[in-house]
Image 1: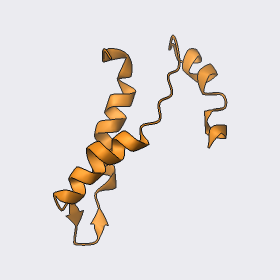
Image 2: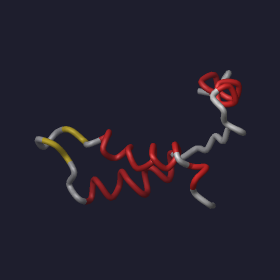
Image 3: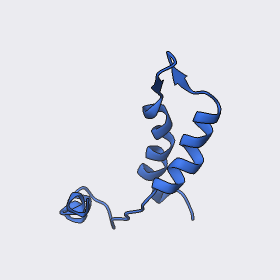
Length: 70
């Protein structure tokens, strides 16, 4: 929830960031990563979704956001 964001700006600035950018990527994550993985049958042992694998591209995109021009 919103309480997760408490103190993040101070932590970001303390670590050398010039600003904190918070984006809601849920819809993009589902549309661009989860649906394609499900369509491709990306299920391990017929019962486990590959959640960590699906999340990695989004984590990389968020982590390196300052390097990407939008």
